Image 1: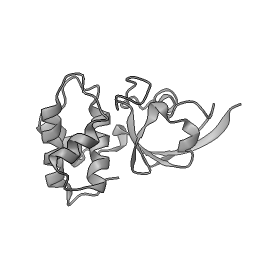
Image 2: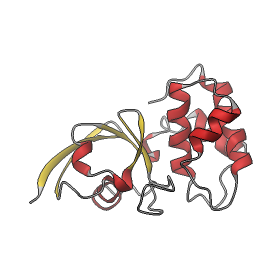
Image 3: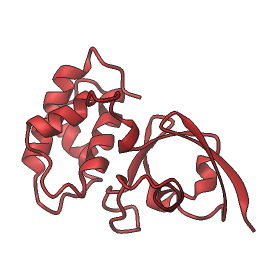
Length: 160
């Protein structure tokens, strides 16, 4: 049986009537046409589907949309401030941490969640946190450099 689910997606209230067990990822992509969040493994193992739910890293491919009811969801499409990239996005660009781009939105949102809770992580903490996100291009050194760069710049900017 379908249910009416209301989400606050990138600051806008959105409603969908759907199967409550349908994945948040599917609703974001198919109903709201927010395709920056990627389908990778479908098992919550690769991190390509990472979004922020109430500011916390969430694997949207294994999250039933009903769990997101009345919650704030941030996707990569809502991460920049108008034409200004978020510092994490800018750091990924500056460090060349965007290769094929498939993992990038999940990597950026995962990094932002880390820096929100730990604005000065060690390399070990960055590696442990980012371990849940897989880069098929093997760009991990550039990703680590990007998170370091963002951490250095993030003190003056609030993460959504």
